[in-house]
Amino acid sequence: EQAQANLDYLLAHRAERLAVLGELLAEENIDLRAGFAADDYKPLLDALHGWAKSEWPGIHDRKIASSKTWRSSTREGPEIAYSLVMDVAILLGELIVTRRPVFVWSLDLDPENGPAGSDPASFDDAMDSYKRPVVQIPKGGPFPTIILDVEAIVAYKYVTARESLTWALNDFHYVVDQAVSGAHEEYWVAEAQRAAESRG
Image 1 (cartoon, rainbow, N blue to C red):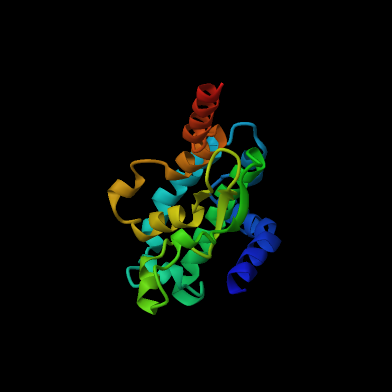
Image 2: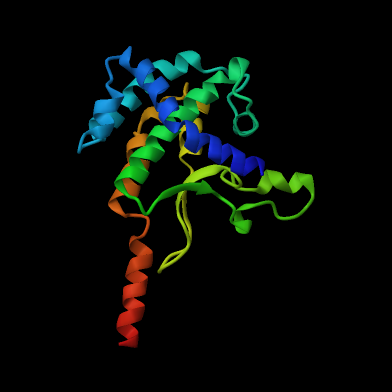
């Protein structure tokens, strides 16, 4: 129920959160609204990555910079940084679902991604995405559920913000491009075609 409430909150407030992010980016001369609406979203993601590369090392706090803290964060006090992380994740997710409607905001409820048993310690082995809002293609057709944990991608950027290697690649760009281009489904679609041809 709590997981569903988190997803419902995200869906109800995503426009509001994007507006807040837009105001912040406007201070850096980045027009989120125009970039989002443009046919080519890549300049927006280039600017977003450049801004994060420049600003996030300065707001990086080693006391909270861990996957464990992120997963359990209240996003209050020093952990407000993870509110920013979520806002950027919402932007990436919205770029995907608006350009590729086969992807939707949903919860990762796949038992295979959950804890191996009932022991509380086993929850440490669960996927970060389990019972969290993700962008996914629901299971069906020729392929299994395809899950993109956009928040985890952005959180990792923050957690490792002071490491130069973090900024070597524009992961914001990559995750959106891969989803919009259909790269995640290519293997499964090709396999289905081969199976159909072998039957025919």
